[in-house]
Amino acid sequence: MTPEPHSLTGPDDLALDPPPGCPAHGTGPGGLHRLHLAEDLTALYDTLRKQYGPVAPALLHDDVPMWVVLGHAENLHMVRTPSQFTRDSRIWTPLRDGMVKPDHPLMPHIAWQPICSHAEGDEHKRLRGAVTGAMATIDHRGLRRHIGRCTQRLVNRFCEEGRADLVDQFAEHLPMAVMCQVLGMPEEYDDRIVQAARDMLKGTETAIASNQYIMDCLLRLAARRRARPEDDFTSHLVGHPARLTDDEIGQHLRVVLIAAYEATANLLANVLRRVLTEPGFRAQLSGGQMTVPEAVEQSLWDEPPFSTVFGYFAKQETELGGQRIRRGDGLLFGIAPGNVDPRVRPDLAADMRGNRSHLAFGGGPHECPGQDIGRAIADVGVDALLMRLPDIQLDCDEDALRWTESIASQHLVELPVRFTPRSPQAVTAKPSPGTAEVPQQRTPWEITGGPTAPAPAAGPAPAASRPAAAAEEAVPGGPVTVGGADGPARPEGAWRRLLRWWRGY
Ligand code: HEM
Image 1 (cartoon, rainbow, N blue to C red):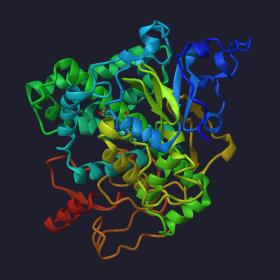
Image 2: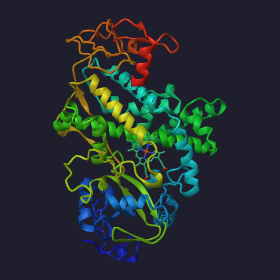
Image 3: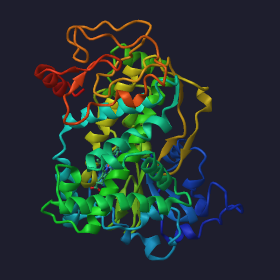
């Protein structure tokens, strides 16, 4: 049923019933739902869909009106029609009218900035062209190899403990370690930059200082690469013919780092949680009926890392999903509700294997240019972690898992796990369970040890005798060595080096 046309900004709305007395009430003027007060946004989107159809009116903080686009087709139409909808918030009526105050909680998303996410037309092409041009220089085989090594290093940090929190110790680290390398500042990756990014995204009182810390790292990097380019993302961004200014370089490095970090951390946590809490999901993975990339894609349908994107703005009076949209109206790009639109997914339990038409990476001119990198981090990271810790189990009741939810995204707070303690592995080795009780039989095709190399040590070695740091890579420039974490290093032959390069680990 097509709902009655409803205008967000028309005087008819303002004349409707007054809001219920309590300011914390879930509905406000006109009986419209307040998104930020919803206890369960998924349930609210279902209610809105039943009440209004694929595009519903709702309220943000301070009762600022906003359309929520719930339909899959309507979302795609919106993001793919730049002649009608823009990401430039400067035309948004509530902002122009002063209804949105400078301290509005969504201001970090709303405030226009000179970055590709907010630009359109030729300016968007110029800025985005520089970003995609720099991304095109990334060697994807090398990237996957690096992701594998970062995973090995992270697992080495906790594998002897037999317990870990996969959010704090893995999902929140791996994307930052990888992105620092991609940008060209591997030396900046440490616990501090991870904390700064988390702090900034949480919007705590130290968020501004954390943002400054990250900006300082990025601006120092940009200055170094302007003076002396190397072969990394930042050098190619700086040297791109679009000639970005220093400010534009800094802002785009920040967008890339933070967009990549937040979304990919969520994706990793979501996939790992499913593996640990859904026996059917895990059985399909370990039984070979589902590959890790397929599991990642299923997660992008069911739990997209960004639930919504704020926002798109109507450039002219138009119609969307049966609603009359006025020039200057704001629309929330509804990724999570669009992905469960019953018109494209009548049965939510059915797997979506082979179907990549979810909205997790957006679409149209602003479609995520880093999606292959995000997918690679999740695919390689999950695969390598499960190879290292095959008996990993959830270490709490599933009901005890908690999320922090905002309109923009949902973050798993913790993912406690337990597993058989294991020795650290050489960072360059192929990830393997390395269980100690059963010495590993080396098959002829394995390249990590060679037929005569000893099997990994039996049982977790005492931490003092086998520090994780000892499992680090060979010194750059020195002879490349192979062997299990505990085996003697041997010079690596040309054939092994070629194989290792080809396989990526
Ligand atoms: C799982 C990981 C990721 C997800 C789910 C994701 C999702 C998204 C979404 C939904 C958008 C907005 C689309 C729109 O406005 O319509 C976006 C934009 C963007 N993403 Fe990603 N992203 C991910 C990883 C990355 C990575 C790894 C990078 C960089 C290496 C990246 C860089 C960007 C940039 C630069 C934009 C702005 C593009 C533009 O406005 O033209 N993202 N991403």
